[in-house]
Length: 251
Ligand code: PEP
Image (cartoon, rainbow, N blue to C red):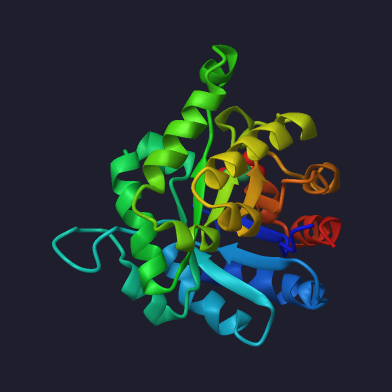
C-alpha cells in the first residue's frame, strides 16, 4: 500500500485582509497542532508574508494562489516563483479553473509554470477538471487526459511525484454540488493512471486531491477513497472551525 500523507489545502481566493488572516490563524493553528495530514493555507498575495510569519512555528505551510512562469521581467501585476520563495512561501496553486476561465491561464503557460515552480523549490498544486457540459458530453476522460499531458509535459518523469494534482470538476466548485465519492475516485484513478503511463514510481508517490464543495460533512467519505489523497477546499476553508473539521476528517 503506498504511503502518501494526506494533504488539505485552503484556497481563500480573493478573501481575507491581513487582519482577517491573523484572526483565522489565531483560531485555526492551535487546532492543527496534532500530527496527521499536511495542511496548507493559500492566502492572497498581500497576506502571504504575515501568514508565513504566523505559521513558521506550526505544522501549517503557506502557498500562493498563482504565479508567473518567468522569474522576472516586464509582466506588470505578476509575481514570480523566486519572489514567493523569498517570502518563505512553500507552494503554489496553478491552473485553478477560475484562473483558466477569467485570466486566460492556458495549458501552454502551465507547461512552463509547473517546472518553474519545482525548479524554484515550490510545491505546485496543479488543478484540472471538466466543465458540466464536458461531463454531460462524456468528455471528462479526454479533458483530463489533455490537461495532464499538456500541463506536465515539461516535468521529467522522476520529478512527477513532487507535483500535487487537484481534481476539481468545475461544476462542483462553489456550487454546493459535490462530486459523489465514486465520481471523484473514478476521475482521480484515471489521473493516477495517466501518471503511471509515464512512471509507476511517480504514480504511487503523487498526491491527487479532490476539490469542489468539500465540507465537514462530506470530507471523510471523499478522502477515504483509495486514490484520493486529500482535498483542496474553497468556501469551507474560510471558517477556522469548518476547515479544522475537514482536517480532522482526514486523520
Ligand atoms: C476551489 O476553489 O478550489 C474550491 C474547491 O472551492 P469550493 O470548495 O468552494 O467549491
